[in-house]
Length: 502
Image 1 (spheres, rainbow, N blue to C red):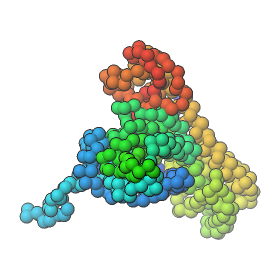
Image 2 (tube, rainbow, N blue to C red):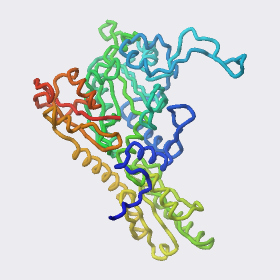
Image 3 (cartoon, helix red, strand yellow):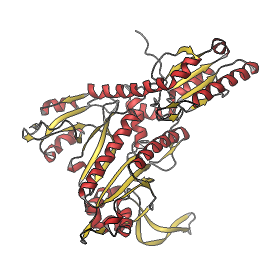
Image 4 (cartoon, rainbow, N blue to C red):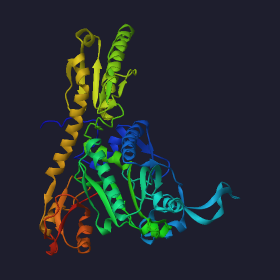
């Protein structure tokens, strides 16, 4: 019996997917657990990846007319109480500040002192505090629209946490806009979910489905929630971004009113939208393999790493001068409008160990250069998406490096799309639905996306709860064909995506 090939990550995806995910984070040096339960320390390689995501998204937001601002971390409890559905949706996740200082405890240590007149909530999301600010800013139709985004941290007191996917504190952006008409606010909601889909597919190489959340899955207080849903390699769904049409609900709660052109006082229409460091988890689970992280070139902190090879100090000087010249030539080139990001790894580490360091961190291209390569005018190329390295001339590599990266970017997207297509199934009966989502060990790969007509969300609750399945979204495209509900047999106008999810 042939031995299974040795992999850098143990266990493999097929052996224990949840543990594989944790080991990829550790091997790639992305993050680690913190002394505070449920929180994480994002390490430099992981934070550089998040910074690249931030920059790309920030440029996209500004291109659509938005500006950045910053609002308080603390929210008076009374602000949340003004919007009943909102407070009900977040109450169990809120961290609450009740005192404003510490004092010595007579028995030793410290104790809280100075009780606050009103408890403060550590921001779980900012609709209420931002709405109170907008109520002061908005007086006339001339003050509209307000198009603002903030980059911030939020706290949601999660009981079961997993790095990047669900932590008590996480980083995100949240856009909050105010409009004079419902039509403008609805257009904004659609525009921003399209921005997220563009980023997911063209930067993260992660195919997504845009759709509407059902009433039970909507953001608390929203009239409509749009989301992008992606399939991970274990065939579970991950919600990768949301955009909410809030109607006038928060305007009425926070008194955001303006004088219209006809002189009437009216409530404004608002939206909110956001993505978070959950995208890092999505990227890991979309592309990585049993040797570690695999990064799409557009977001990789380093797109090409050059590994100089030499035996002694005399060779070292020659090789380093040579690789510096390669680096300079590559940095003068661009990939999709951005300068190439090149690093030289000249650490005093064995060659094999150095190579695997960058494999596990997902660097798209490794370039090995030694004295013999200098003589031949060649380089030895390792692509993260291919198992075998290959040689080519230095001049050819430099000329084709952007094309190689583009090929890798597209290849990762196509591979993820193929996985989704192969694991999406039209289902018309409850029996087939149960078989598709048959209960199994969490470690096992199972399920996928079930595409089904449904008539009544409430009547499906017992079935979905039993199978640990949720309605991910009602797709916005190619969903006009009426049919019959797979479970109740009633007439149904739309299909939904059903899946197990993170």
